[in-house]
Length: 258
Length: 256
Ligand SMILES: Nc1ncnc2c1ncn2[C@@H]1O[C@H](COP(=O)(O)OP(=O)(O)OP(=O)(O)O)[C@@H](O)[C@H]1O
Ligand SMILES: [Mg+2]
Image (cartoon, rainbow over all chains, first blue to last red; front, side):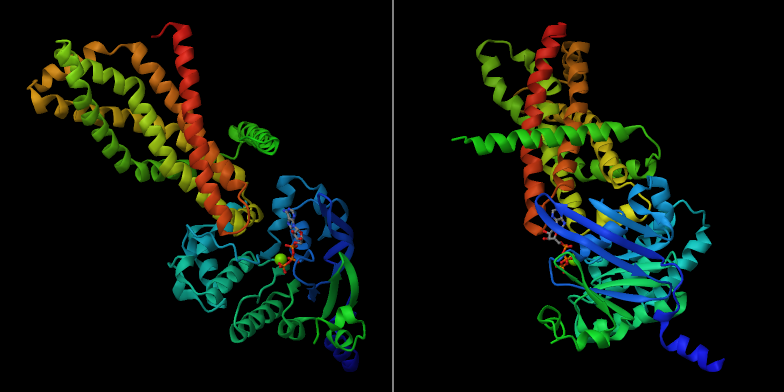
């Protein structure tokens, strides 16, 4: 009995129910430029999946399709049982409350203070919260990323790493069950990247959220990935654990892990 | 020389701007209303342009008076100075100069603001956070520009007339009371109303062009700069075109 639990604990990939997020045969082009061509990925509860691909391969396009910012040309995207492309605005809002999205460029509102940035999703989604609850949530979220003292600063006054952490706090403030990270460590020094990676891991342990992480930072891949999906030529070229990937002989894949 | 390339671009741009405008009207009255953001924008827009508008209006009133005086003196109708300058200011100089200043100040700042929000994904982030960014950013700004400009124009007219009063009194003396009696005596409903109405259209043009240029900004900081710049150019041209159309309409309606 104890042994069984232990094996289940060491390999989370084994505990599969229905996937919380499933992308099937996704195609997306801009004019004559095909970006995604029959891409598939599945994400299970409590799992960290890293999507690897070189710059311009369509990683941002992929997660923008998942959150409904871009409409796919064909294929299906199912999040928590809902088919994203067919939802109306209201239903999309409801489902988006359960999805956290960390933008590649942070997307902090630069006309607002850090506090207002964090309050924005709380106030704009149709949820009723009193001022006290809002204050508490904002404080807790900032505390989690160690930036409670920046509450009344403007984003422009923060360093790149701090901005990333504020953006992370804003992403997590609604306690999403699925989190999409678009290159969370790009443009940061190795020490700050490691801090961000540690934060991502903490979040996952705390909320048992499922995360789809887009990255080409090998440190990040090694530390967080339960599973790696290679996005090459618009499709899921290869899929497997980090260990399996580094021992790959395929030159297209080896190029990433050297 | 205009090549067919330029014409194609011009027509495409016109088409895109009309689509943007029709999207605006289709969202205009649909809930949810962003009242507080609208009021905040009115305040920001008015507050930002007020000092510049007042300063230029005062100078225009003063300079125009000093320029016209010699001509009226030649014909011996110097006493008509307040009336003549008053009409020029209320009918044309006030609305157009204010609108052009407004385009330079507000059109460019809306273009740059929305442009940088676009390229740094802030507009996408709003959409993900349960907000319709078109309503929240575009509709509020266009409405705010539309309703703020007429107020600014009225203020500018008043300040310009104070400039005129100063200009009249540099070479001769007219009492304060007499000056205003002469100005208002010469102004009729047909002078004030068309000018007031057209300034709504000027404000709308500045707002919609600024938002359109910003919302469709190209990636990169250069794209943002270009949005701001072309917002000013295009809205200034539109102001003159609207002015041209407005004068034809008032002419046909016999309001002249
Ligand atoms: N809105 C758009 N219109 C036209 N083309 C687009 C659009 N968005 C993305 N593309 C194109 O899709 C391709 C993939 O872009 P994407 O931003 O997904 O790359 P990426 O994999 O995220 O790269 P990076 O690692 O540099 O962020 C690019 O060639 C880009 O030019
Ligand atoms: Mg990207």
